Image 1 (cartoon, rainbow, N blue to C red):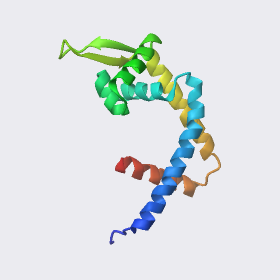
Image 2: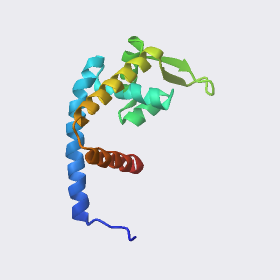
Image 3: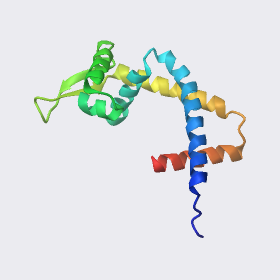
Image 4: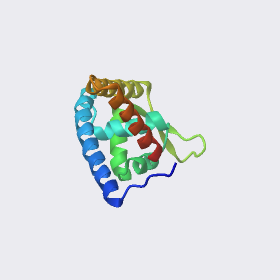
Length: 145
């Protein structure tokens, strides 16, 4: 079977729709995130630490696409609230790594559960065919990202 190719116009139309839908979805989920009491930036940095493991402030800043001083302030706030700890790097005595604490992991996983519950509520009443289509679309997005 020949691989179907989309025209540039079709790709742009799909990209525009995905962009719009993503923004609306993220806005809706951001409201759910407010229950955590953490800003979006702090939740995002904490997520990198929980799912990516301990890292340096500089690497965390690069992952979050912010300056090192900005990330340092975010980490200081997370540390002050008990969500992360700074530890000496075993391989480099000059380096410090940031690690999520059990409290930080709990907050992040509770937030994820709230987001998933919100999505489940949104999907309630969607036909089986549409649910399979969304599942396939999610698979494609995971693959290309």
